[in-house]
Image (cartoon, rainbow, N blue to C red):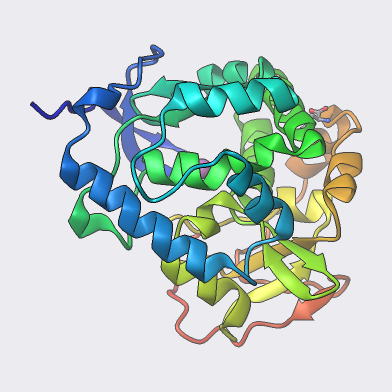
Length: 296
Ligand code: PHE
Ligand code: CO
């Protein structure tokens, strides 16, 4: 019989109004994946690997290849963990789905990355509102092999525990940083802009849209700029922020955020689609097709 995730309640989170699941870590029930579920993995894996050549950054593509995963079957967390532990000391832990924020931060602060064990249904290949195994594993795991990114993620977790203690406004600022880097980040390379954000690489439509569509802004990354900026949870992003390197991202996030949270609390948030006077503009979006309202 097919196993199913255990939802406990619906809750308004930074990812919108979504189910929040039991907080316990679970074994990946690998033997219970059905042929249909392995098939969903195969379809998505092949489609995205093909699409991402020349669109995702080299670090993502090369590191993903290092795991030896393929379209053949849903990977086993245990196999990935052998590679991860040896490289950066990270490990994957199975979860039922989105975790409460503090629990999530605590995992990251211990170099544990929570991966949803279940995969989307065949009718959800192009869109799913909440993270599933394909997003978490295909999208997030490769860059955990990059030593700088691995360190960034752990420090983000530690910063999250701290922000949680400061208050909800600080958490909003920090979550925007995660959103515009870990989930939806672009990186400038000598060959042009490339994707590193997990929310993009796991989406067929957005993998193309973020780089090739005239509608969205593509702006240089700035720490406070990003932490002030609202985002979209139900449409493609109106703005993507571009880093020059993972070192730049790492260095920019090393200062203590406590005084930054205090400054930001006194200033207004920036709408998701805005371009400001001092932005470094890679591309000014035409805004075509943008939905009114709905920034979070
Ligand atoms: N420097 C941040 C703080 O003081 C923590 C952090 C580090 C956040 C790296 C994100 C990435 O809160
Ligand atoms: Co994600």
